[in-house]
Image (tube, rainbow, N blue to C red; front, side, top):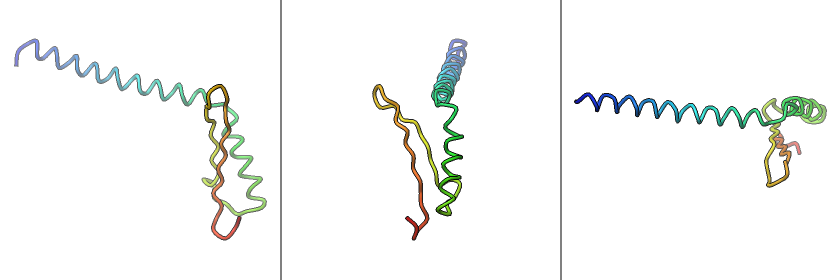
Length: 84
């Protein structure tokens, strides 16, 4: 293994670290773009639904989906069997 091979190996490691960091930054940016009110909206929806149906905490999912120029609020509620 020559001296240049050693330096080349470090460059590949640095490139890998750079790529991983770019992925992490992209994920952080996408999660920051979500509105602050979504967790509160999910919690309040769960409270209202629980007044009528006994559902699990994870039964309510609220997502914001980009559809071209529009934002679409996607609300999904998993009802227990026998209630609907």
